[in-house]
Length: 193
Image 1 (cartoon, helix red, strand yellow):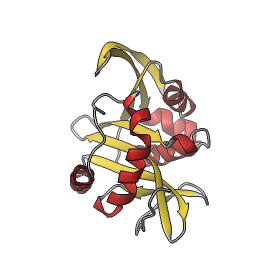
Image 2 (cartoon, rainbow, N blue to C red; image 1 turned 135 degrees about the vertical axis):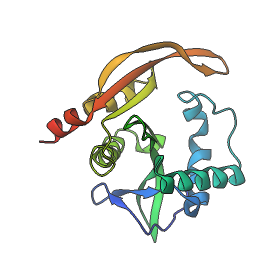
Image 3 (cartoon, rainbow, N blue to C red; image 1 turned 180 degrees about the vertical axis):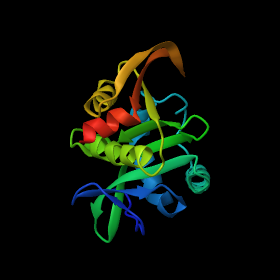
C-alpha cells in the first residue's frame, strides 16, 4: 500500500479526493506512487529511463515548490482520502509561460484509479485556476497519439485538437507522434456557463 501524507492545503475534488501541493512534504508517498507506476508511465512519457531515487524525487519536488512560489508552475498531486491524511494517486502539472499568458498541462493517474473521473475533475480544477486567478489566455497539452485515455480527457474538457507533431517524442525504442490540443480562456468560460 502506498504511503499516506498530511496536507495543509487542498483543492477539493468532491468528498473522496483532493488536489494537494507536490512539495517535499509528500516525498515518501510520492516516491511510492512513482515506483508503482513507473513502467506504465514510461510508455507515455519520454525521459522515464529509470525509476528516480528518493533523493532525486525530493530534489524534483523542491524545485517544483520553488517554481510554484515563483509563479512558473502549478504542481499538484491527485490524492484520495486515507487514514490520517491523503494518499497521492496521480498528478496534474501546469507549466506557466507568463510572457505568452499560456501554459502546458500534463497529467497521469495510478493504474488502479483509471476510469473513475479523477483526472477529468482534477484538470478542470486546474483549468479554473489557469483561466481564473492566473489570468491565462491559453492552455495546451500534448499526448502520444496512441494514448487514447489522455486524449479523451482533453476532448471531455473541451480542448480542440490542433495538429500532430510527427515523431516529436523520443523514446528509447524510437520516436512517436504527439497530438496537440489547445483550449482558450473564452472557450473554458463559455463551457462553464
